[in-house]
Image 1 (spheres, rainbow, N blue to C red):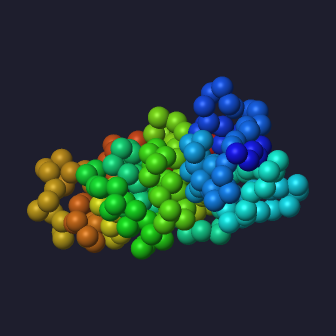
Image 2 (tube, one colour):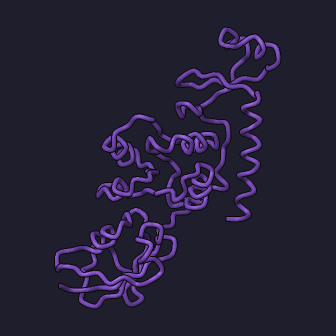
Image 3 (cartoon, helix red, strand yellow):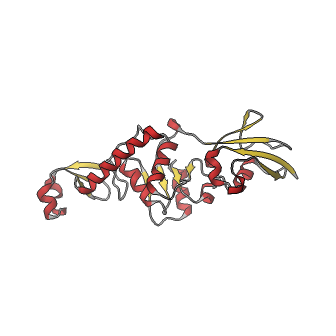
Length: 238
């Protein structure tokens, strides 16, 4: 068996066994095994990997490992290189709602099979968000991210940092329920859909072009505004 030494950036430590974090790892391999195979054997999805270096030179997943190689593995960084369109797995519903609240195109269904998630991610060039690292290792997937936290607001902060979305908010332009585009509508046009107190106290309304959900600036809107104000403060701490 041949051996190579892998060193992972701290951002990728999340995927490694606790006993292996923060230290170079020596892995045995056969001639036919790829860097991708070895990295993912440790639990690190290839979509989480950006640059890899051997002896200070950048290498690709196709690089043929040699005995004694020392590979430094760095996390993926995107910035403006990718359109912020997402597909979110069924366990991250609150995160999907937050992304839609901020105006990001977010495909989400509570009941969706893994193959459907992958199909949407690949055919629509969407970023897959999932805590299922095996799903993120699918060979056809090009861009994905595994939220580290179990807390939905912390997950949102991670996504905003990872994909540098601080200047790309467009709040209250998408339907929280279905991701459709909202448009302003005259009160008279939605009057039959409103409860008596809503009719009495509110004058400005929007409606989803897809599911026809009606929105107005009630207490739910005020709560979301406060959260968005809080989110803006995160950027100074990122």
